[in-house]
Image 1 (cartoon, rainbow, N blue to C red):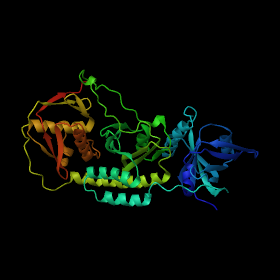
Image 2 (image 1 turned 90 degrees about the vertical axis):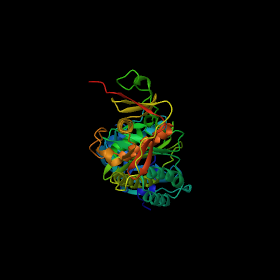
Image 3 (image 1 turned 135 degrees about the vertical axis):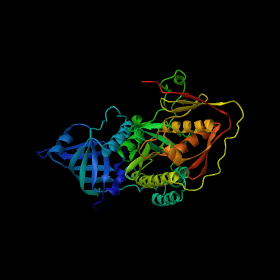
Image 4 (image 1 turned 180 degrees about the vertical axis):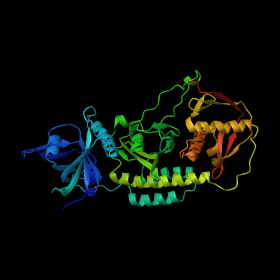
Length: 450
């Protein structure tokens, strides 16, 4: 019976190397192992092009081939009749295969040998299952369709962004049996991603940053495509940042200005799915596991659906937070705090903020906090709104849409995690209050002149 590519996707995960048979122009056959057969769509697969060898020469001269793949859990063998179409050397397909090949190479002890030169795309003419006695497939970890439906219902019920972020990660754990997850949002103008929520780690890592194109998360954001790795790939791991100097001052050079990433030290399975809204990548939904082959193509499909709903919900809830027309809560003057002063230091070089000698945050979130504490101290103000912050020229928000509500959630969670004497408390949709348990002493260190 002829099968479809969708029906054999588990056999394309690379746990067992495939084989490809080709012929040269004289009809002489050649069979060789191939590292990777990648699912493209229901009619196409892509094969890893690593060496300019006999197989490569045959395919370019005679574009018909036969590919054999094996289901890693049942042992079923499949034979694919394929026609070579083209080779891609950049873009989402190439990056997906490059990341997965890195995991396969590490698993096989061939990290120094396997290097992807291109993704050879083939049209699949037919697929047959070869005769044999095979094992039954194991039961699924969960019903992904039912889990997606329930998660969708929970997302639709969320009315605030912080509730949405926590709901999605809690649903991944309770419905999808995914223990380690995080949500990162893109920092305008799109150079870095910052962690805004996480689940399953000893430390949350909220505020930690990943550069666009760095590791599986950064590649997924840059390419706007899911990136899934089934085995540990050292070159796609995130290592805790070393202490860095904040340029411009001797004092700052002694302080930590990086928040450690919360990920597993050695994840054996990783899946990063871009979060999109209105055809624009706004972040990444990232999950990982210490087990090989933990995330399948079906997991990828389900999380793509979840990420799509998450992106639209983020867009809607952030817009609502800045368009809120409900009456503000009764304004309060800052209460007279007792105790030793809390020194709030701001470094204009990168808008980093320190509470006493402890690093808190930098960038746009740092600029927001510095604006709030200045008004708190100098004009005796404690109540604010998102709409006002959006228009405040001191913060220098990007002209394009920025995740303002997410920045405030990030600040709120960082202050709570650090047990700081400062707190941000919501007083309504798009409105919040800054409170202080100690007197504030502000120190502004201007950016050095260039």
